[in-house]
Image 1 (tube, rainbow, N blue to C red):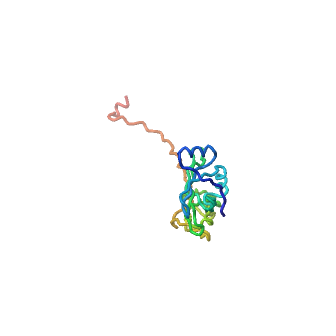
Image 2: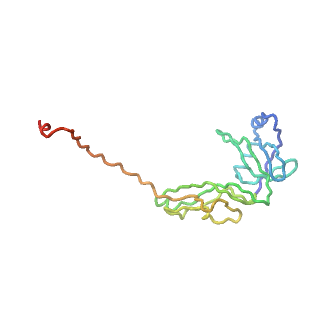
Image 3: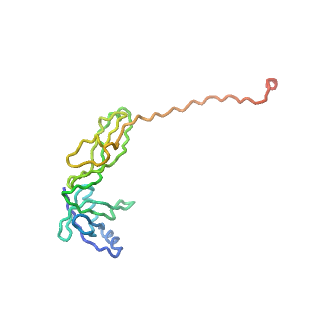
Length: 208
């Protein structure tokens, strides 16, 4: 499902215009891709944050540019290191009938039988590449690990085939495994050290 976002075209010179926009509560951005020339825009920071929080990074965002409806995906973004506020976003204009490839987060669900038995769950893959038309792109993929026993693992090939999208990762790529619990070795007991023998000492000397 697409979500609307109001945008405004912006100037690119002088360079200080970006900082001015940020002080005004707007995020500098750019749109390029399908049937559109590279177009600098700005969006309301709070509204953009709400849209992404409620719909996810893989949602289709519809914007009006010069009276033309443009369907976009978030292609890239940069955020402040400390506040995590968005400071620039790159939107990709897309054809709604052509498949796109994006990353989707992998969420493990259920409690593995092996964990209940004392095993240790190790997740090695946290996102997968998926391909679908823009309106079918998933934000995340749920992977059920309930039946995993100690020594078991689950791979991309074990995920049930979805009708809306295709996972393009290597089918043998491992997602998670249940390992034997680590056993702490007990420290060795200290033994009483024998007195060292003095080399060259005769029995007669020792009797004196």
